[in-house]
Length: 304
Image (cartoon, rainbow, N blue to C red; front, side, top):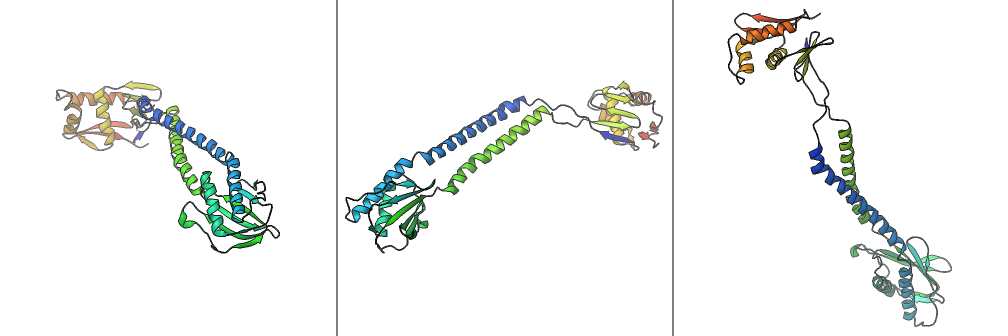
């Protein structure tokens, strides 16, 4: 039987595509990498550099609270950093705290220092270390929680802890918008590199005819280790017969498809080329190009 087979050949040159598309994509990937590195260093800087200005702002909060208690002589003790996001204000003397005033004092001091606008404030009683009052300010004002307004905390020893919250959702979205395109670009470049290293297989037409292999694109027949060259018209005729194996192909169809657009057709030309094909296929006795009288030709391959 005649069977189509495939042969791998190198893909066409991709240099133009690389010039017009791949190189700009590489540049885009490098830009994103630089931006990510800058953002990373910037975030580190934002975590470390505001420590001193934060302590100054919080001392200003403590100072204002003491003044609201008519106390201009006692000290605001050193502001301490509890953890990466939390600071503590301590006082030398006892004081009373009005929640409304505390909210305003903290807000004013942090705004002057241009610090985060999302934070949580907790007032602790020194002796029992329990929260006497707390509230949270969010960047979205509607999400801020300020309870117990107007209820004054009586004279006592208090410490105030302020925890600064970063907007993790927004930060994640920023990095996501940068990382996703970066991954897509790197994925494309990796695939392009792999493609250029291993050229894309392209189907090339050939047929198995008995013990022969008919390679149309190379215009030849292969029989064991023997190569037999074919003319263009021989290839065209043999391909039509292979595509219609064991079926009659009319003379008019063969003549039209092979000679119509390629010059003048002489009545005996078809028979001449069929005769040439028979000679070139004679090594395999299972192959026969039969003449169906008055109709056309049929390529027959007997089963072994």
